[in-house]
Length: 420
Image (cartoon, rainbow, N blue to C red; front, side, top):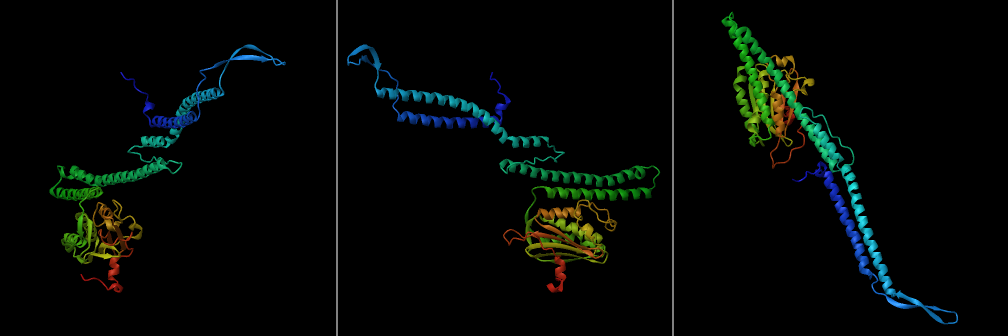
């Protein structure tokens, strides 16, 4: 049975240490081997293997000599070769010892250096392990040089910021939707308990109870439809095709003609043909329909609503203008927030879900556009949907014009109002 290796053997730190140490060992071995080969090639080295016998003589002052014995003698060349041989042997031995010591030292140094290099990775992993789906407030915030690991940590922090924002918006939407659904459900339950199922309730009480329950269910249905529309527009994929903005505006106006006529309100069309973009026809028609729904509900009886579509300064636009109560400047910044309903005057007409204008903004921004509001209390409001031109045409500026296009069209300096 194979013995299981320790856990640190499988770590990146261990593999980096072995890789660095092996690479350093190989490079050092090549250098020392090259030096040894150069020395060996440039010198004639071999040990002394043969010697000669010679008489050992002593010379007296008077010139006579006497033999003291025999000694071993070698040539000078043999001595040089022997010295070179011993030098090569010493170089070889010291090189092997140095390689062994260097390999051991490189393991320790490589372990320390790889640990320092991987310290940011451990910080990233530790922070990621502490992050939960219910708490995305933790950030890595890596310090140090602006290297690849710092870029990775900053990218993860940016991703966490986006996820935190998305989850907060999701939780807020759920909380708001739950709050909005709780009220009609409570109304339905109260009427069921006190009127519709009460044995002493007469027919008039039951009819009133049915009317209240019907209004509550209608409100719930509208809220569910708006939530479904928001979820669909949040999806990454939707049906994109060539969309004629004039057709979108005309179809939306036709849907509200009968409702407007019931309140003696006229819907005027000022639509220019040939305004084509790439987008979702049904979604854009719903956006214009939400604006018309508010305009028909809030405009006074006998007034006029204008639906216009045209092109200006590299942008295409659809506008809905009404003569309703208008929106104060302090509330205009919040008009596109989810579940915003405005002041008491606007709420008195009809209980609404507060998602209509939020859906309008979401649809327009999903098409790369912008929504603008121009409103004066007790005068009326104009909502303008600015949409970029189609691909292949001149690129639109980064931001749409700040002016109200309908106000410019009605200005005599621009040729007066367009024919209706």
